[in-house]
Amino acid sequence: TNKAEVALTVTKKLDTGSLTLQQNETFTFTLSQDGKEISSQTVEFTKGAANNTTKSVTFFGLEQGKTYTLTETAHSGFVLTGMTCGGTKLTVTTDKDGNGSVQVTMPDDGTGLTVIATNRALQGSITLNKQDGTNKRPLAGATFTISRNGTPAMQPITVTTNAQGSATAVVPLTSEDGNTFTITETAAPDGYVLKADPVTVTVTPGAAVTSTAGNGLIVNNYPGVKIQLTKYDNTKEGR
Figure 1 (cartoon, helix red, strand yellow):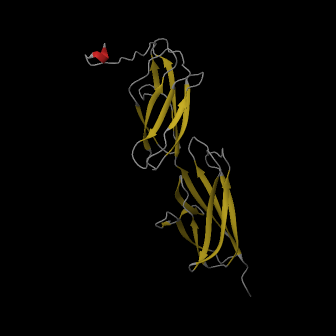
Figure 2 (cartoon, rainbow, N blue to C red):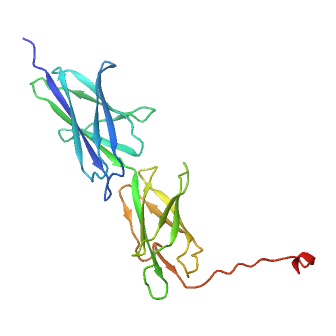
Figure 3 (cartoon, rainbow, N blue to C red):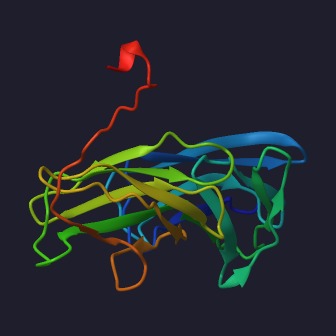
């Protein structure tokens, strides 16, 4: 008699650390056998999904005892950190395009399998606080640009402090090891002098870097005015 068909369930798990998704994200899985594609399915996560959120899809009609290749298509802004089945870590093979594949052999006892694929979001956040350097009063209206150091280049992010003197930006990363960012004040609050020295911080995936003593993200401004001087040569034009 013919053996009953079995199913493979694929569960996608998000690793966003202390952050949430900043936009809707779709991940694609493809199942193939002997180099021939059998089926392709997607899982979708909505903006705001938190750490450890999961979504699942199921491939039905598979043969008992047969081996299949499960491939996750590379997804910009995420790293496939691993796949497990029944608590066992599977060996992931990554091709030149960044697609990750594992071999899965279906049991011959009529039961199905579940593979869990975990993706780490390459994002972090930076929160800075602006205050009066003398009385420590929060200052609104300070504008900063945040730039990622190294390559590839990132379009600088501009933030402005709110009434609590705070500003937060979610920044994209290019590495699981994190990236270094330079924060430059471009406009001081009215009546205050611009801070001249940029601040540099390192951000790792899922981390929310906040203003603490010593990391430079508590930014002091002091009251004053900016005086612009124009120097002329000692000529008729300069008289």
